[in-house]
Figure 1 (spheres, rainbow, N blue to C red):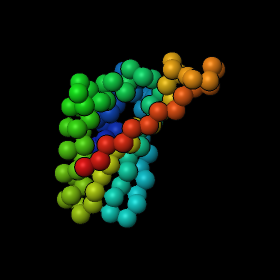
Figure 2: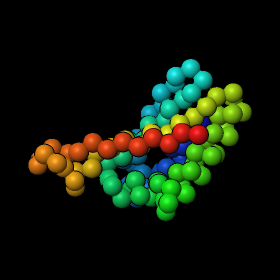
Figure 3: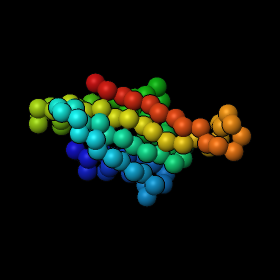
Length: 98
């Protein structure tokens, strides 16, 4: 499932070499963490009104169900543009689960 998710994400983002996906197994649920470096890549992954990420999650959930598993996607990264503390980057996270 991780290879599938990496393939899809790398096709969508502008800088595919910077796309890092980590797999965290936890019982029946596997959390896939996408670490982004650029804010523009997040917009491409989420899509308009979240349609792209929901479609990716639907495919990932179907693949997980075939193996009697559950899947979740977590988007984590650093947005350097909106820092409340001056020079320090602000951390941003988002989680999608079905």
